[in-house]
Image (cartoon, rainbow, N blue to C red; front, side):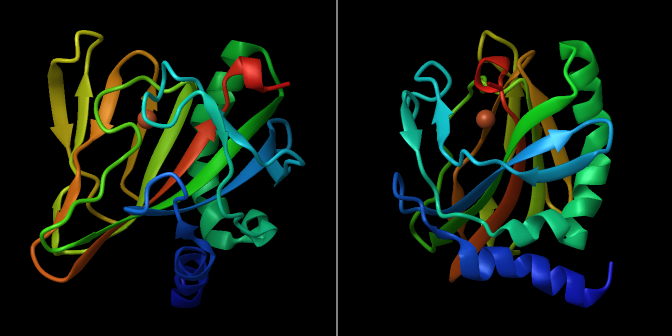
Length: 209
Ligand SMILES: [Fe+2]
């Protein structure tokens, strides 16, 4: 991937994210897109609100959240399209199972940011199932001074069965509703640590309308 493409993609994190209005330990931005399976093309959705149920997120669920907008330039960005091409296989399989050709997806840019002696954390904080039937979690960047930030998987009894770490750019974890997942809080060994992730969320059936 050419360096300038990377730099342009990184710019979404550097210039478009804003402190998460619901937890200042993270910076966030979001864009909702419509995915057309036959053409495998995406376009911007008119509706840009994000809703999770309280049962999926006891920290921030049960209310509509509005995040800083990510510009529609994303839909023509070569790095994004490259990632989406890899995701398409899984998204298409979901389309097939659900019997749909058009899907709402929300793309979340999240920067966890921790100073030495402090912590950044996810919402929700510990093991959970998302409302979304499919979430593709792509690591964009993890600084070497990061402590923690391990992904944890469990069955429905919340006893961890796997621990792994998204470490290199574009390492990806795909989660669905068959297992619970979490990411441990992020600390810093010195200075400020960052964990930049991009989530591609396939929205639940009930929110496809
Ligand atoms: Fe989740």
